[in-house]
Image 1: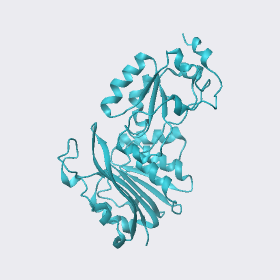
Image 2: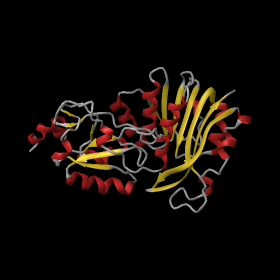
Image 3: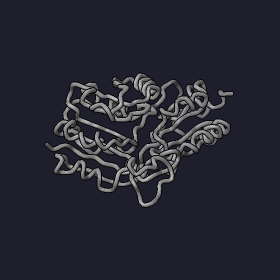
Image 4: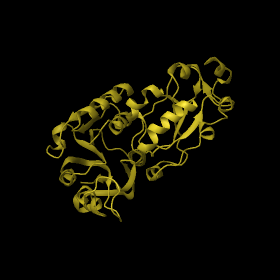
Length: 313
């Protein structure tokens, strides 16, 4: 059944770009942090045998049979251009699983021969990396000069997307640590790091009760958090982050109306201007970016604050 596709599998044609073949799906607010024309993440849902026989150049193999248990490997829902390739039945099953969780994507039917005509395609086992961090983190690190190598800590790292991205981006001269109080999430994070071939440590700890300085002996040069708020921890960062170090943070904001999804309590959400005060000049920081947008929670996009700051003294 797979053999007919071979007639469409030709060496990559540099005159045909993946972007022209695969327009990005409509995205939510965090996508505004990405550069215009960000290449789509192309996920091939077909069995591995079919992928190896013929696939779009630059696509990633994630068979539908593994999709549910490997969701944490996909880019964050709604934040990156995403295209799914598969049969009509495979796309239908993926749609039922992904749409309620907030993912948005284009669909391309692999059983439509017209789709393959002229496409840049190839054979073989090579599968492009799937990993993408949250869009604000990617944007922030593209914008700034990195501080001197030290420790980078991802607070509330969950299943490890952002921590593994930090380890990939910063390299072996850095120590990258993901910290969370959920053992199962940390196990997934370690599998993700191992699969991506990067060195990252994952610590089971409650940062509401333990200082970040206890996690490493190296200067802490980057602290990142997403969808996490602990005000005592944030207030302590001027004493924790090394001079020249960065704070990259995004979490929910107490917006203009009642929240439609958690966190519901105002104490679990930032107030407008709060982060600029915590990381202002009087606290020894320079605010490089302070923006409002939205973050996904329980399938709902809720108001959020995004901050990038550098410690100046």
